[in-house]
Length: 84
Image 1 (tube, helix red, strand yellow):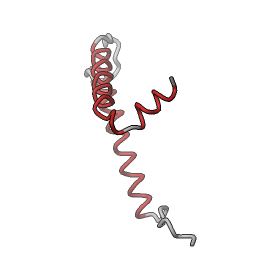
Image 2 (cartoon, helix red, strand yellow):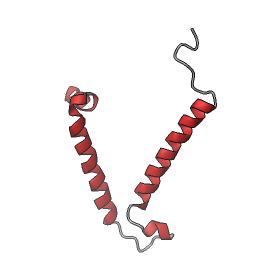
Image 3 (cartoon, helix red, strand yellow):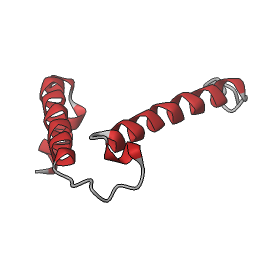
Image 4 (cartoon, one colour):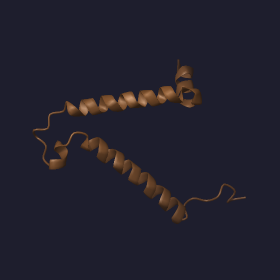
């Protein structure tokens, strides 16, 4: 059982199936977000459907780019043979 799961997520032959699974899960999350009642939202943006998902995705992308910038410009990343 575990070998099948590892092969599914590690093998490039299953890339199309993984992508379809990702889109299905994404669709289910969006549909679930549309079902959430919003009458007690405190802020305007909390009433927008999908705001939390968009905010989380944007924050994640920003964090990745900032980390890569900091790693390259801040001197945190070194060449592979730096200690040789």
